[in-house]
Length: 236
Image (cartoon, rainbow, N blue to C red; front, side, top):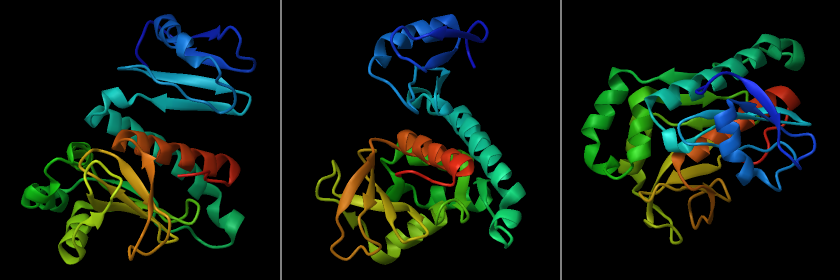
C-alpha cells in the first residue's frame, strides 16, 4: 500500500466503518464515503485503500491504476483466496476440487493476441489483461467462473461472429467470460462488460455488468473472496 505507513481513522458519521491506509489516502476519500454502510468499498487513484465494516475487511483496487502491476496484485488476491478454498474443499464437499487458477500468459496466448490484432483492436483493457494473464479457471467457485484465453475468445469470434449488443456503445461485442451455468460475459469496444440473461445467445438480452474491465475484474475478486468466506458468491 502506498503512503506513509498504515493507520486507522474513523470516518466521522459512518458507524462500524473504518478506513485502513495512510493518513493522506484516507483523508482524500473520506469526503466521498458519506452514505456508505455495510460491506462497502472505495478507491483512490494510484493506491490501494481498505474499508473495514461490520462484515469484515474488503480491499478495493483502483481502476485508474489498471496496469500489469494492478493485474499482478489482482491475481495474488484471487489466488490466495482460492488456495484457502482448496485446502478444505474435499473435507467440505466430499470430492476433490478441480484445477482452480489464474494462469499467467504464455507464448501461445501472446501469439494469439499478435495474430488476432485486428479483431482485438480497440479492446485496450483486454489487451493489457492478456499481456499478463492467459485465462482464469475457477470451476469450484460458486457454479464456476471462467475468463477465456485469447485463443478461445478469437476462435469463438471467428466461428460465430460478433455478439449483437444493441444498447452498447459498440453494438458488436465479443464473449470473454462465462460461468458454469452458461451465462456469458461480453465486452464491447467502448470498454463495458455485459452479462447475458440466459445461457443462449439466440435472441439474448444483456445487462451491463461493469463499465470497464478493471471494474469487472474487481467484482470477480470480491465474489471469490465472498464465496471463500461465506459460501455465497453474490451478484456478478
